[in-house]
Length: 385
Image (cartoon, rainbow, N blue to C red; front, side, top):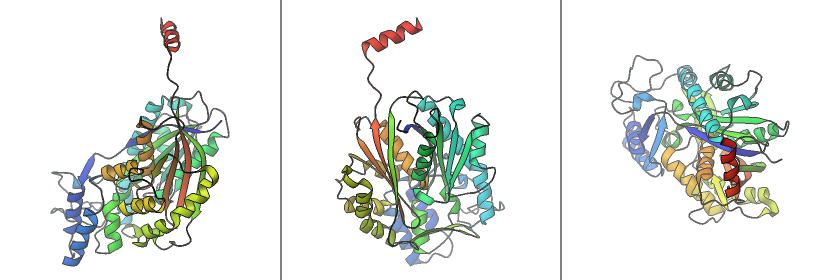
């Protein structure tokens, strides 16, 4: 049987910041000259993002920062500070498990999956580290069986959700009753830091926090019928870009290199990468593309010669949530599962981009539950009488 995504649950931290507010916070940091301030305004305003969520509660309206806290990101005047990597990771340890569990609970509830039936857990993250980690905490916090098999996909960046689903698909093939819980949790804003460097300004203008969980199974009797069948996956390294998207660990947070070449490389490479992946299958009806930024979506749209509305779901998630690294593509697929306009049998192509530069692909098929007939309703009523 073909594995399918039964349901997807999402969760974001309570602090929601308008893009204009985030821009002004970053522009007010010490040491920013007039040229850097102009660049900050231009980059933030051109991002096509309206709001983002963060675990940094000190940036919430009316919040009072404690500058004596070694993990504080703002001083008493609201200016950016730069905590050490250890202090940032402590905040990841404090915040990530709760957000991870919230997304997982929603996926289980929406998919009508009893937690006791989960057989495998796959966690995905590149924004923090600890052990025993979020995979362990999920077993404890959700009351899963202590025999659940646990796996972690770490430090693969924005593209990692698709490898996570690929692992889940392989696991679902190992036993007929397998129910795999995949959770992507990224707290990207924990790695913001004051900087006038153009690449850091670009990163600070797009990244946000969020978590998303998917239930994957090949058991047709498990959970809610329908969903997204996971037909096949692909991965490709571009011929250039190894130094243009880089994620390393520094003394003051994880450091992102995100050069202006990234959208241009994607624009040049995307047609060939997607053509090789699709082969003779032809173009899909629906596209779920990771919104690394507005310019990335523009380049994908142009490179694949897509109609203007083809990436509406991706642009909508970018607008409302920003770039939540690996979790973002699952937010897009969650929106597609709710979209009544996507027909049964429609093919969905998922694309995500990560360090390397890596292109991850997935081909899926939308399956809608069969409409219930009058006989089905009569039988259901009789069973409850």
